[in-house]
Amino acid sequence: MIYRFADCQLDTDRHALRVAGAEVHVEPQVFALLRLLAESGGRLVTRDEIVEGVWDGRIVSEATISARISAARQAVGDDGQRQAVIRTVTRRGLQMAVPVETDAGASAAPVRTAIPHQVIRMTTSADGTGIAWAKSGEGPPLLRAGHWLSHLELDWESPVWRPLIERFGTGHTLYRYDPRGTGLSDRDCDALTIDAFVADLKAVADAAGLERFALYAVSQSVPIAVAFAARYPDRVAAMVLHAGFVEGSKVRDRREGTAMTETFLNLIRNGWGREDSAFMQAFSSLFLPTGTPDQIASFVHMQVESATPELAARLRTAIGEIDASGDLPRVACPVLVSHARGDAVQPFSQGQALARGLRDARFVALDSACHIIPPQEAAWDHVMTAAEAFLAEVGV
Image (tube, rainbow, N blue to C red; front, side):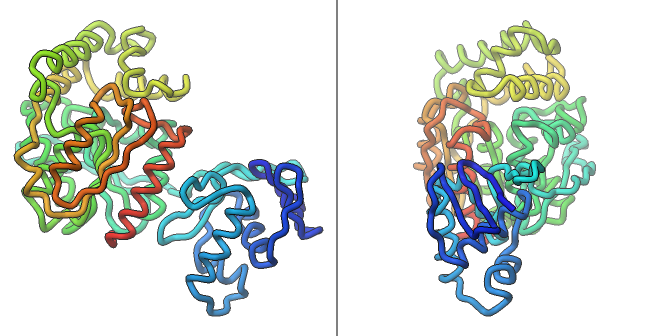
């Protein structure tokens, strides 16, 4: 059988590997590892399967396993940082990060980590607002704070969000929820304040039975996660914060910040609710400038379905007024902060301010122009790999 992936050919009959047309010598155990991954069809291959398939179940050291993985990556032109061909799923195993075809013409499935389903439930926040939340994946708990905007059902099939759900769900039990007023949560809500948003996050954590857990937050859910961690330090083991801010646009710069908020509001007022609207396309392109047509269309559809024009405008106004600067010094857990240098929605300087204000924070600068980084960008795998390594290091 010949397996083809990236620019490689793995010939199991001849026990040969060719890369870019040239034969590459590999040791038998490295070849066996590559064959095991190629035959997996993109599914996760666990450590136990690797030991059984490559070493016939014999006891082998972690250093030896790591050396063979490194050699396999080097043979196919990959490396542990980029992981473009062979991806490590932290504490779980390995999988092919590219489609695999055989000489019989059959095509192995592209990488879609097996997450069979999500379970959606409802809970009630402190003021009586109903909050929809979902559970998927397997492993230590990771709660994604609700952000602009989400819809638990539409996100599940979104080319923008599904890759992230799958990636985190292979090493963690992932909990997600729709913010108040959006998605499957109650649309009729009064308070749109940081206190109300923190109460929603707490309601989901309580409903899920999470005593201590890791938090993932992006965009305006970042200051909400920070405020929650400051108020409930015993419950947050670690945080991964991406594309966030300390102060909303109106707080940090009354003139230019207000102008940015008004730009968002004008786009919402003139086009929300119509997927073919040029205003909706322009609004979404600010968040996802390098998105494919399918990703932009999905992002537009999700936003239109997730919130009414009135609620969307109220949310953007509330986001501009958030200020979490007083909460930063009270956050005790380790934090990973990442931000794209060219982010047009929340400036790079806000990511720097987050990392500077938190006592135990690491900072990852990303080469991207996107607020929401799509999975086809190298920066996406960079930040996901960094997040997985960070969570593994801190033990969550």
